[in-house]
Image (cartoon, rainbow, N blue to C red; front, side):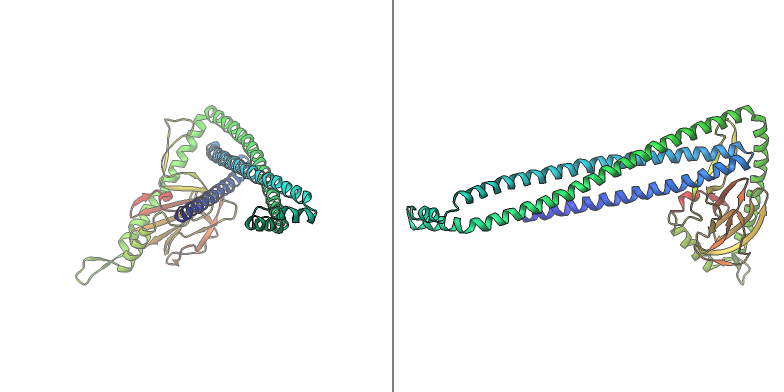
Length: 395
């Protein structure tokens, strides 16, 4: 029996711990979504007044719609959690109340019995009327312990009533919290409807001026192609220079560079984010959000919307290979991590590193610049001359 109780207690503790961890993860997800929405809200507002690119604005709005839907979903989970907690708390209150009622009833009978037998002469007569000595002793013990028993019962009732009051206050707080979450959910749904209406308006604008946006897209393609060529050129040169010639004239890899690359590879999925923000454009092939058959320039990295003045930070130890400027991207920094890996940070201003500088994980290399009303870091990660999806590498 003791083993069963111990196992039950351990199971309850495990479930409570898992529940607390789940709540913590949910709160973290919700806080992250709220931060991303705040960033996007500001950029949408600034982009509408400063940028002529409806496509850029549509990307921001649609990302915000996705975030708001996710936030509403998190609120729904939280509301269900509160509902379950309210149900369990009410059951606990009912249990305590039933215990209070039982003890109170029992206590009332004790008091009545004590009142009826308050005359000590009756006590003596009751004991003298016993059939034998054992019965007389038991009756004596009953009268002797009656007062002590009444005090103990009164103490239990007071303690239970105090516990009941605490539980009722907790129930009231849970109800208050649940109502607050429901109110937040209503506000988010209203903002979501406004975002969707804004998205529809931008889509109509894009459809109306298709030729204009196709020209803009052509110009953007040229910028991206130029950027990709420059990155590939620098990486090709860096890869060659990371090997050393042996005495016999053959190429030999630098052991330190090989070790650093191996360490970089071990950290796949664990690298820190270069900035805190919201990914508004993912890696790989892209299609126009309105003209579905129109292919957009492929993205060799990700674009992360950030708060104004955010600093870009290196995701791993390495050496700055080059700092250069590209049209539409302002200043760009390419960092080599050993023999095979490279990270690329673009749309920067106030860059504080130069080619040849050694950098460490988390070191700030520049500030994300505001371009056409947008504060977005363009971040790429390459293995030799093959671009990788950064989201698979960062935690």
